[in-house]
Image (tube, rainbow, N blue to C red):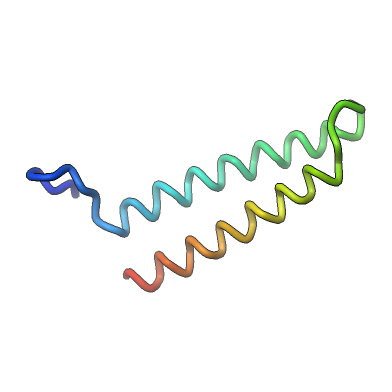
Length: 69
């Protein structure tokens, strides 16, 4: 529910939006990681780092979401 006076979203809705965004990024990194097996322009080690970072961000967002609930 958006507050009509300020357009601010409740923390739970904002948290869900952020979590969805992070999941989309992680999905993109996973796709590129698979492609790195056949495309030498893609660095598998760098993509592994990005995947790990995305996983950590998703965990942190979930912790924040649970605390706000």
